[in-house]
Length: 365
Image (tube, rainbow, N blue to C red; front, top):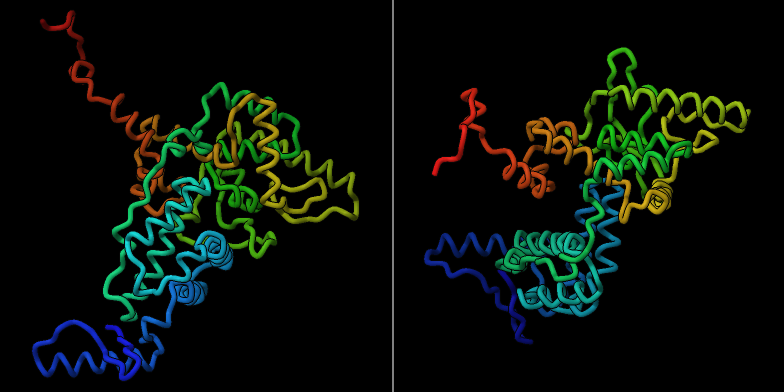
């Protein structure tokens, strides 16, 4: 339901009604919308004003760090050409033009999809508030470009040989234990940095994942994990156990060297003074290790991707992989690792001969 402003009297325009009861119900909705302040002339509200309103409404419903990311995305990527467009004049073509400008800025399809997702959410709220009848956002599909197809995937799984070279390069480095944790447990960067010694059960050989170290308003902070599925307990193999023992010994040496300057943070991954590690530092370190190991592209996510891809390739049930990864369900895992799933489908056919316990001597002609 909208208002048409002709310069004289304003007319409320909405769906055609056939009964008095429907008309009265529509009028009540219009009055309620006016009281809420959501029924405004289309000549007044611009898309920029509306998406800022949506941002402010959305912020209290998410973590502070997430709200900060949303604010940054909208301020950087939702540009003036679309911000000046009247809300009710936003069409599929307008949104496609926005996406084209994002492509020209060299943004990957993943980033463009996130931006369009925010735009869709803002437009859906406009529908709910009666400012527009439908959202054109649902009709816009963000597609890969030729550059996307050529771009080397930083999240690709490393080969066993690459992992061996990486571990050799990290040997003795102060962040060596982080490399092992990421590959052995498949954790996210923040989860690894938030791991405490109290989360490790040496007797049962398990590791609890309960908190993360994240960036919020430009500052690092420890915070609990946001979802129930993210909080999980994982098994610890002998390789990881040995790495953790070495880290305990390393921290003991650091503590002795620091004396009273040592910070007892209780974290597994720390600086040489015991303080937590700024989440931005590992990215730079991994870049240096990649060059030393001769690996073309490497990020802190490479360990997680290698771990999860390896589980899928080994035939671990997708529901189990999802639980270990901290995903909501197997659908999320399958979508994120579709390439590995397809490889497994092609290679993992049913072997009837093996099932029956014999082999054919020759191929049938």
